Image (cartoon, helix red, strand yellow):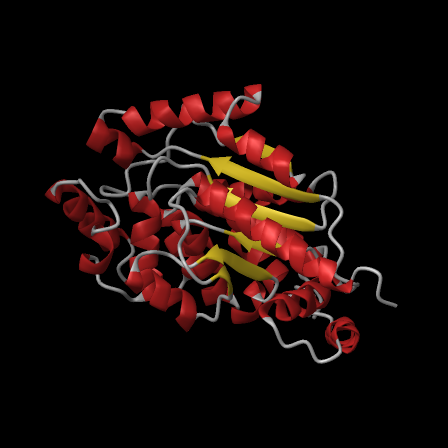
Length: 319
C-alpha cells in the first residue's frame, strides 16, 4: 500500500500504521529448525525475536528508553508533588546516580531518558483535551527518536511515580472496562480520583472508536511518545519490550488502530491488576514474565530484557 500525503497530522500516523512491515516467518521457521523441537518458553522467545528482527536471535546492543511527562490533573490533585518527584528522578538518571543506571550497567543495556517538557504539563483532562492534534502527532514523531543510534532490542516505559489518571482513563475508554476496576490501582487516593476519571471520560464521549482522538484528549506526552517508539521500532524490524500501565495504554491505542501493530511487542510482566491483566490477554499482548515482580516499570523492563537475552543464548554456537 502506497502512502499518501495529508495535511492532517493523524492521517500521517494512520498511513504509517497501515504500512508497517510484516513479521518474517521465514526467519522464525529457520530459528525453529535450529531449536530442534525445543518448545520451551525460551524457545518461543527465540522464534519471536527472529520473526521481529528477520535474523538469528542474538542481542548485541539492547537499549532502554524512558519518557517522562507531567499532567495538570495530577498537579491539581497533589499540588505538584508528583511532578517535582519526577523532575528529581530525571535529574538523578541524567547524573547516573539512579538505581536504573546500575541495573542497565549490570545488564549491559543502554539507557535514554526523555524529558517531555516537564515544566509544561498537558492540560487538565478532567476539564478538556490534553493536547491538540498537531502537538499529539508531533510527540508521536518525537518518540520515534528512541531508536536513534541503533539498537537490536528496544525496552520502553514511562518514568512515573504512580500510574497516571491519564493512562487509566485511556484503558477505560478503549478497553471498555469499568472505572471501579481501575481506581484501586491508585491506592491511598480519595474520591477525587474517581471524580476526575469520570470527568475525563466525558471528554471522549462519542470518540471511543477513534483511538488517536482518545490519545489526544486523554493521553500525556509520554503516552504519545511510547506510541511513536513502538512504531519506529517496527519500521526498522526491532523487537520491543514494554512495561507499566502507561505503556499498556499506548499499546492499546495502537492495537485499536491495527491489531497487528503489536506483533513485535511483548509486555515485560503481567500487571497486578486483574482487569488490566485480562485486557492484556484480550488484545493478545504476550508477556515475558507471567507474574508481577515489581511495581516499577523500568525495573521490570530490565529483568525481562535479561530473560530474553538468556533465551537467545540457546542458539549460541549452533549452525
